[in-house]
Image 1: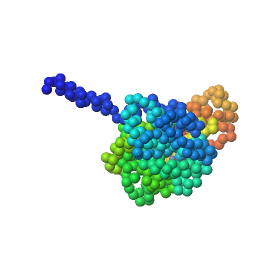
Image 2: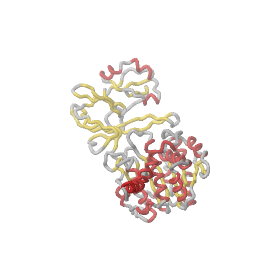
Image 3: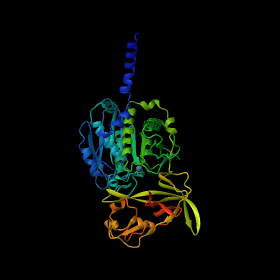
Image 4: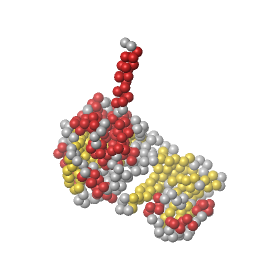
Length: 472
Ligand SMILES: [Zn+2]
């Protein structure tokens, strides 16, 4: 054999690995922008925003209206594929949990396209028949709230079946006799992976079907498949994957659907730093769902043990939004060392399309086992509570006339305005702005939202306003 034939052999042997060796998930990661549904840019989209996206789907997609929400909004089923294995995916049964709905719209765009990913598309659509119910709770989604128009938690109505939305889900699953189910939710952004300093960006669960948490063949498959999905995600969000609480909930859909004979996988989208609108987490959903569909179709999971699933750490709740450590607070002439944690609520306006953040003290004391999206070590700093400026200012524009630096030096952190627009609360103002009549609870207690300075050697160095810290 000449050297040339050897090198030729080597190159023909190795070349395909370099060219075709890219995994499906890598291809999905790199091409997501191309398929991303650009009309959905943030979490507060509505039923009316997704209906046109469904109506424009062409064959081989089949769109069916399968019922209506309590307020009369159409709930749709989207079917595609010709395979023997039936997979049902439903999203947003909780109205304020929309991440997977965005990913499903991206998946529709992916499946509609034709390009170099055709072999993977073909594999999915020839092995599986896919059934999607995007946005199962449109009434809740339109208000961006968890519950249905009946004000019940749809995920506690699997047995009693009082909500039209719950009846739709139960009936569809039975009608198609789904082999697999994907129950798609969002979870708190304050969940951590175990006790670690990593947020639980994605949490999985193969829900239990009884209090004993037995593993039968149906649940085992879900566990095997989750093991593969965890491996996929570890490449993109290492150590940010957890397992959801596996206590059996007899009223919940995931638990019952598992019990009814459909291998069920819960996916919970949590938090990720610098991704407040969850657009990166949307991409993770897209990537892990499509990868999973290919694996289910090709039965890759059968070779996987459930050990990988068992090894995923459970969700912990060890995150705060901001964590100020070791600050000194003085009360009645005595000094105390405190850690202060802040979390945030989203206060909605503009017909639930917009919001501003309102932060509050979530915990106080020794928080040394906790973590923050942002953390600050205030060792050696003393808390100086801020004061409210005694004059009411007419509006936001008039703030400019004040010498804000001087007001800080005089100890003011709060300014009341005669008229404060909701969007003005989100502007980066170094003061806590309130409406004239508004009362804020400023004390250092949980639930309150005090603003204060952190001072060292008599000099105010940092300012904490609405739970966020700024250098002065
Ligand atoms: Zn949920």
